[in-house]
Length: 182
Image (cartoon, rainbow, N blue to C red; front, side, top):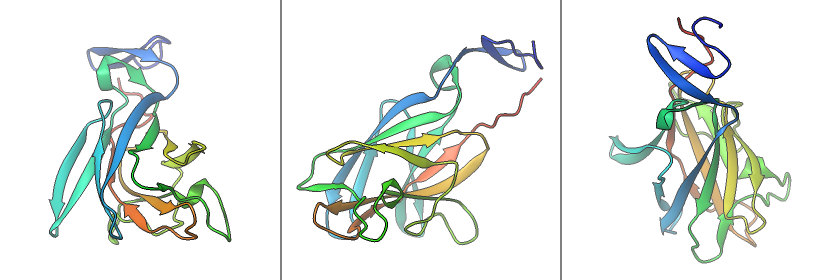
């Protein structure tokens, strides 16, 4: 036992949580409601709490990541952002200068400059790991290893576009860290 935990359980105070190895698999549906740039989106999930927030006249969606969701402890998340079919849009990866997954997602911790990351901005705590061949499912890893509010942006484009034309920029709320509590 290590600080109240054994290999099959996580203990916080008097509460014991069954421990499951690996990242928690969650799906988030992304629906384009208006494709006039920068776009209007709706995010839904049966796996992850998503709240709405109003700030400076803008509606934001906040995705909450807790390693203790559903009564079991899992070490972080693997998120599948699934784009609801809309015309010929997909996640943007075709930057002619540097094609790749980092073009589909930007992420940053929230600071005095706000929560919207710039295109190309990366943060180790929320990074893309895969993309389906049809460009409609982006897989992202979140180790959820620190208490942290962060902003992220999902970028979309039509197949022939060489820069993103739509941007969805929600907020993430990491509620866990790798600290052992006794």
